[in-house]
Length: 134
Image 1 (cartoon, rainbow, N blue to C red):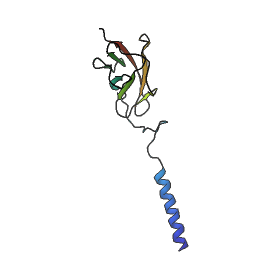
Image 2: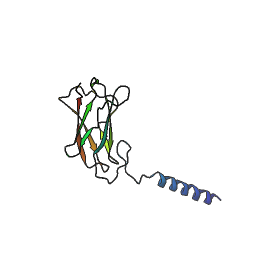
Image 3: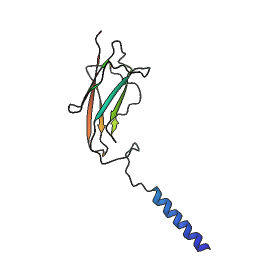
Image 4: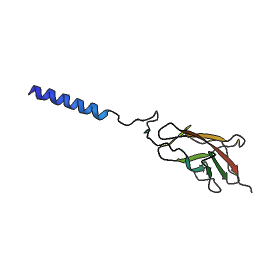
């Protein structure tokens, strides 16, 4: 009986160890690293302090020049805007967006880097914000 118990404990320990072993790699953020090489911005949104869009039209995304051009409504406070990126599958964005961003210095646009799913390809996108004329 004791031999059966020991065998059961060894089997249970082995199964537990095997189940906890990670077969899929993850990055420092806990995100799955895949084989995907694509990395780009597919859409962009800009929200005001009330979390409602302040865009006056669709953002123009140029994946070749790696730019995002967006025009906001006249009177928008550029110092407190919340950018939202939609990326191709398995990509991630750096630096992380943790709150409102100040876009008021239009001579020095903000930049974010899109990193591919395999974490090998990085493309830096520049976001240029302009204000709609009256």
